[in-house]
Image 1 (cartoon, rainbow, N blue to C red):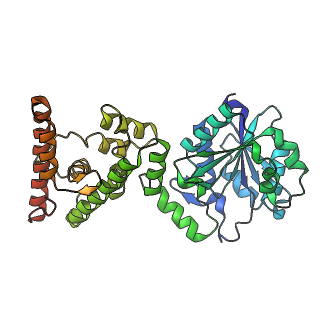
Image 2: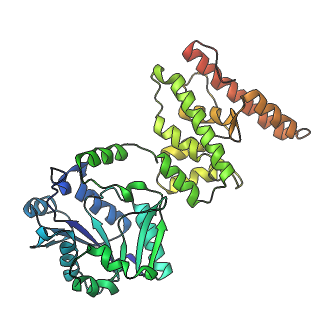
Image 3: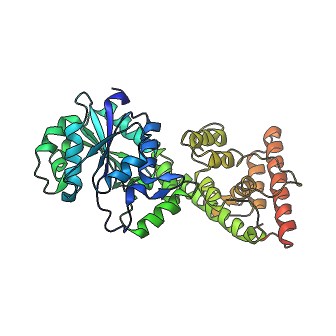
Amino acid sequence: MTKSNIAVLIIAAGYSSRMHDFKPLLPLGQTSALKRLIQTYKAHGITHIYVVVGHRQDEIREALKDDDVSIVYNEDYDKGMFSSIQKGLSVIDETLSAFYMQPVDIPLIKVGSLERLYEAYACEGKGVIYPTFLGRKGHPPLIDMKYKELILASSGEGGLKRVLEAFKDDALHVNVCEQSVLMDMDTPEDYKALKAYDSFGAPTKEECLAIMHQDEVPEHIIKHCKAVESMAMSLYDYIASFNLCINKNSLSAAALLHDIARQERNHAFVGAQKLREMGYENIAHIIETHMDIEVDAKDPLNANELLFLADKLVSEDEVCGYEKRFEKAFNKCEGNLEAQRNITKRLNAVKAIIAKINNITCKDFPYG
């Protein structure tokens, strides 16, 4: 099984009546919702891309004139989405094994989610693969072509959901870490939320939790990460008015995920690599220095230093102050000179970061 045997059916034929604008061509980032989906599936390695059109088809054809996709016109688009699914399936390449059923109004699907669906389909032998985010089923399902004729023969009552419900035993729900599988743009408010999510620049708190659950991070480590995130946000708020170039969203995500690999050797590096592989380079950069950091008094305060400091102000899930934290560490390593040298180096880094904060705020640090 390879991706050359997989297609995507992008349904872009509807009226967009609740949106009060034409959803396929709404801007998202540097392109449109429809083109964003096409780019994502191409990045996933899908070459069989079918776009089903209807309402305002000429505009879509013009927008996609330079894209290597198959455009399918559904003359019955006014009958609803299921008619477009049937039309797309009726012309899909007979040699293909499966297809993603992708509504155009769920446009921020990520390659990572698609990869997990494809891997599950290739390995588990199930006929319908659904993405789920924190227990909620989303889009797109990946559907085996063995259901093609059943879908084509359906009256359409209850839509695709009704057809597939009869085959629950052949379905698999796959956990993904991107909440975009749940996010549509049926209304202007939905569209506004999608744009905000797209510009967030970091995994959301819910996505961080999903990442930790996927990696089977123990509950006591999750509690510690939440406590460190709370402290990091307090530190950020304390210095926010001084216009430092620190991204709050990235700092929050890095704090929540900083100990994702704590059970492994050299966990700061390993955790950073995990995040890099997921495409979160900015978060990885912050995480990899949360254990050891070089502090230059001449450089501006940065997110790496805030996370390092926040981690040293929290013992498990309780704020304890750095003096108590380091006293405990010294006592634990009594007689181990190399370990104590490393602890001293970290203590000096904490003091240097606090000195920066005191210089910025012209006040004594409140979290000692």
